[in-house]
Image (cartoon, rainbow, N blue to C red; front, side, top):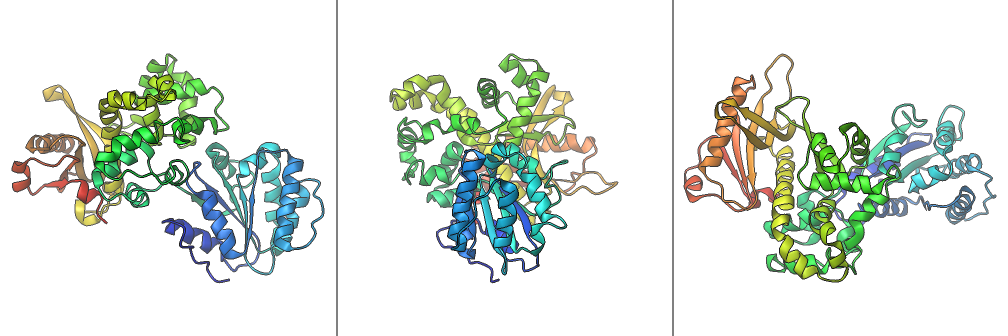
Length: 486
């Protein structure tokens, strides 16, 4: 079959579309399985509906219903697809072979969206699919390209792991992520890099937050940003107002919402280690290990290792809207519900800049570094993160916000391509470069290869004229225009 052309109404998602169409158009005989996952609001359903329409396939959006009702709805969808009567299904042992036999003659996408809803009512369903895709199953003579999609990350992550029935069966495992910071700016129609950083610090790269949640209300410029915040995310009449609360409630593995909100609040307040989180929440470290792991599996928390101190790591919130909620909204929730957004926002802006925009700018700079052209740092980045370098002589520590490492080579010291510091709202000068230079010397003494390490100053406020006019050969100045170029 011809590879379906991406519809013009789909923004970006070129890589995802290529992966899906390559999977669907595979001419080899026999049914195949693909798994598509990602947090809610990322456009998975929009993408898969477009795929099914373009390739003439089946799209079944599951609902949180009993097995009997789901089977009737599934049969209705098959009637629309085949144009012929479909016998009533007693269970999924009847339904799965039927749909695989119905998809014959040409590669046909069969999309089951929100698959975790079906598994909740029928836990045996993955085993049934495994049997039908295996030797002697109905999939052997089928041309179905079965795509299971879901937003419950803990459920979808377990479909292909460990001893799960479908492990080893999938020919496609696609994660639909939020838009990167550059794509998000284009999606929102923002050309001012400073405004793009501010908006991304609030809503991240989730597509639905623009289209459905604020009805395409995008700030017209930097001068409109404060008004935009008060009329959208701080407005109790918009869906975005309560979205951060709902993101937790949608995860099936989360029971004690107050504990999980407390863990996220701890991280939002700057308690980034497991010990710091436990102390903030008022629990023992072993009691918050499970919530931290569940939040990681749900892609709401990210655990980032310290690149220079083995065994140590910090947590950060992956969804900017959750950070915004805990830092700005939660403490004044009642007043916000009563419509006092302008007053609350006026008092919260310093907290927004220090607790949200500053750390988020660091994340944007690390995203830039991992995708940077090899010419920027003198080599291909293999690992990008943050780390702390101890300075015993001065009885202090040097925070490295953006550390760029080359690929590891067996028997050779790890090569550091770049050491970087970020400042969102401060003009950077030679002192910042000198601090990075000191860190480089200390890492050299620790055994790292720093012979060609470049020092990078990332600034949202610009650079001191004395630094800009005479940039040392080992220093790179990276401002907003460079971060958003390309």
